Image 1 (cartoon, helix red, strand yellow):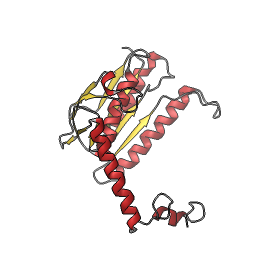
Image 2 (cartoon, one colour):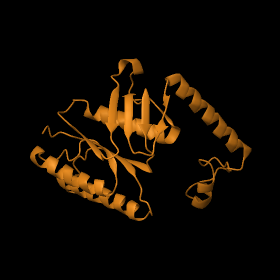
Image 3 (cartoon, helix red, strand yellow):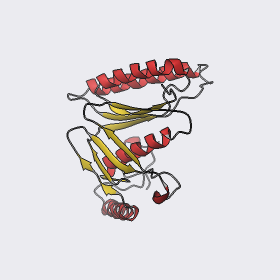
Image 4 (spheres, one colour):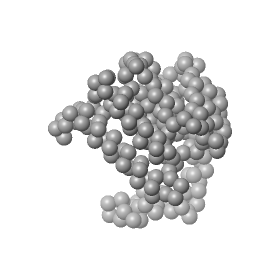
Length: 219
């Protein structure tokens, strides 16, 4: 019988995706093997490269492309990215439609796939291991909460920083996240954006976090 999450949530968590397969079942092992073989074949077909993991903290990515675009690899403009061990955040600044989001997403995909598969759509990449990834897109108006977009931005960032802080202090050696933020504080006037961004990043940096963000401020 298929386990139902609502009727028996504890047993549901023990089973495989709600299909009634326990991890000790041969069927589970078969599905797992088929999944591994299929994934390996797809990685080979798409030409993804093996990731080199390091303990220095350096992030060095060569010719990364976006695997989620409906566009062949040969038609994309590859992106390079480098963050030295002593550097925490990379800030992309510029006008709308300048390619900031695409670059940020491409690098985010590489880091995400590298952590989960050990392979990614790059020519070469050397990365540290992260405990987790956080991605935040720009905040739009929150009419239901009767709050301005700017106030909603501030509320969300206060919550994010507090969550990261709790993760860090709850572990003996802390947790290291890769944090990507697309169009940070886009609802705030440009003359205030950079000051708020720097304040937020300094706090995240003090917690040992790293990442990449994009903002509209051209200064």
